[in-house]
Length: 75
Image (tube, rainbow, N blue to C red):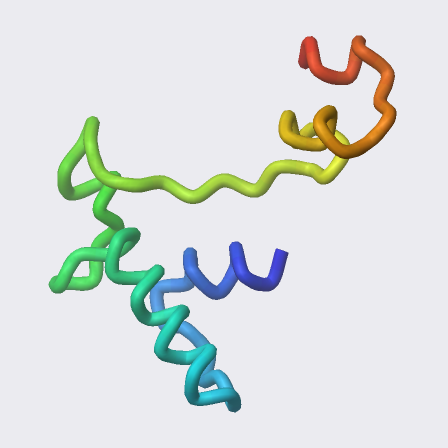
C-alpha cells in the first residue's frame, strides 16, 4: 500500500535509500508527465493508471495458493 501511495502522490516523500529512490523515480515517470499531471488524465483514454488490489483478489495467487474458486469471480 505504501508503494501505491508513494507513486500516486503529487509530491512524493523523500526516500532514505538512494537506490530505491532511483527505482521509484523510474516508476513514477510512467505515471506522471513532465508538467505534473497524471499520464492517464493528460493522455486520456491512454496513459498508465495504478490500482490497489487486495491480496485476496490477486489472480496470480491461484498459481501458488489454495483458494476458493468463488473468490476469483469477483462481485
